[in-house]
Length: 507
Image 1 (cartoon, rainbow, N blue to C red):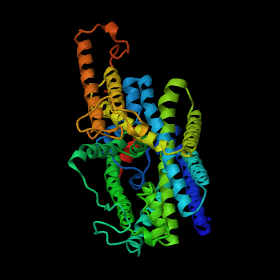
Image 2: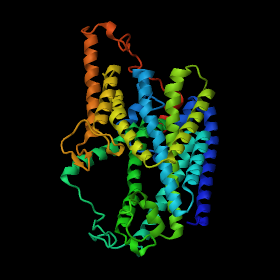
Image 3: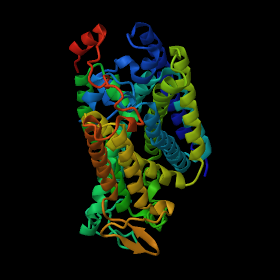
Image 4: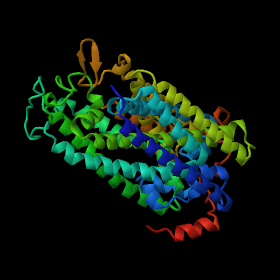
């Protein structure tokens, strides 16, 4: 396939614009460092808690029950509450699934971008991955959260406009039949784009819906935006408005999928059989843009995909670097590290995570499977810990360790067909086809809830045991009850500059 030169030029221009904005934002962050009451590393990680509502809305969603407790205690990363209550050793165990998930997510989105560009632009997938990764890494290295946030405005605005602009062209394409038809000419197996939800599948659907809806609450990228707000009120307003914005931005994806399933692909250069029967359903967005829209519009579409990838990648890079620097390097390796040293650690971490994700992007589809598993671990293991550390005053290290192990064991014992891992626990409603067992019971949610119950129960029992001297004090091997933990109960003073910022918070 020949390279689409006009499209390639347009994408290059878009990349240059994003890079320039990122560099400009990095210069802005340098000015903020001189006037900000916080440390330089805080400016890099959370923008000196000076990110406005408008910028925040373009960069995050969620946080109904987490925005206020996280922001009011002036944490810097998602792992800070664990650090303050449980110590650095247990916090390090929570970093592992979060870090692995971030690296695999970078690999997945870069691989998706490479495949999309190869279809629409005829460009080498490897070259697309390298260029996109380089641009994201460079401006994230230079400006931290300021570069991430300001480039997100351009990227997400471009996604919104370009995808909505594609909708009328797709719907009115000559190859698209009446979407209300139940069976379409191009579908040789007679399936409709309108699926069927069977009662037997309800548990599986609920489980995956909760995974997608709540699993994101265990990602550091979310808390970067919450903790960068000027006040708790601003953080909550940002979450509420961004949630509505995310819903609106998700509509074009649904429409594009329905249109592609309703199209008569025999009227296009793609021909028959349709993408689903060729096993290319995962490439339906670039295929629909390439074969069902004008060339100039498909170029805009590829720009939206590139924007989405860079918007996600820069957040993930800074997310992993922030947690490692703030909760591992600063607290374990170099407690007396200077702010300049911490900034360089963040930059090196961004580079390492970016290179690791980029390297895995050249692999096969197993990377995507591994990312799904890492998402399961965040939902089943990290989310219960986050809920308890923020909303359960009785939670302690013993309960946290017990819940961590239980969530991990229950999820592992449920099996994973994508990795060829057979289940040890068979829940009601399971089926076996060609030797592969599929669980239809919401086993992920069972593991998550079991972990929450375990953390609270074990913590309460251990508290009662030590407080009433049923358990000897010498058995407190983790030192939880050696001295009263004052960090959880004390009121953290708020700098006068931040008080003024809170009073002036407005849309």
